[in-house]
Image (cartoon, rainbow, N blue to C red; front, side, top):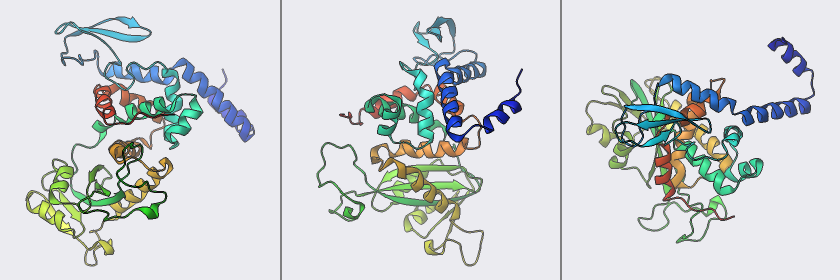
Amino acid sequence: MVTQEEVKSVFSKLSLTNQNDLLSELLLEQELQGKVLKEAGQEISQRRKNKPCPHCASVKVYKRGKQKGVQMYKCNACSKWYSETTGTALYDIKLKSKWQSYLNCMEKGMPIKKIAKELGISIQTSFDWRHKILSSLSQFTPGQLTDEVECDELELTLNEKGSRSLDRLPRKRPSDFKRNQGKGKLTTVQVVTAISRNGEKILKAVESKRLSKKEIAQALDGVLADDSILITDKHPSYKAYANDNPSIKHKRLLAKDHVDKNDSSLHLQKVNNVHAQLRSFLRPFNGVSSKYLQNYLNWYSYVGQIQNSKTTIKQWFLAMLITDQAYALFELFKQNAVIIRT
């Protein structure tokens, strides 16, 4: 049998073009056989003997054979049938063989239209697949942040990309944006970002010109553990929020200083670095509609969690298969989404 080292040795001698061609052929063969998805499904089955009923949440269920290779179940409590993929992003998908390629394109930061062209699918299908996948990620944000937690907001322009009923002239270039356009009219989105010193982070999108105490509470309530230390700039709304939550210690510094002059451990460098990375992450998409922004924030956070994994595609499939509420979240999301006309 040829060893892995021997294969690597032969592969390294190929030209770059031949290497890319060979990798594409191997990837295609793997996709057609559904190996990664099958492996992820087997791992989920090992984690939980039977999938609880998605209709009534009962665990009194039993397996009833397979249909097209997918495990079927019947619930003793409500007598309903369901499958291993019911409720997940993979439910009722006809082209599962293309999902591995789709995830590869997502990892490269490719926009929806470019992926559609690459894989030979419609733009609407590409859009739906992306948001079905992203609907699986909300449960992978940390439950709480502890110890020292840096917090700041990133201001983004309110983006109405895809809207069919704009009440303003479309922007042709970034310089067309006017922050204070119209009294009381929302023109910006604030991404409230909290990150602990161990790197765990939570990002919440809030439509606001300037953050209020109520909006900060909307983003941070339940996020900060008791006795955690909240580090912010001197925005008055953070102080007001901290006053309402005496279990949290609050430390402030001047935003322009980045690091406190009297205490070098008091800084906002981690959260500023996250904001710089987030801008770079969003840039290839040529503007993300604000109503879909939270999905992209969850995507950015999840990529950070699996970036050191050697099996990132498998991790994506595991996330999709374990999230039984993804399809319902996608249906709710789709009520506010636009139908893409091509």
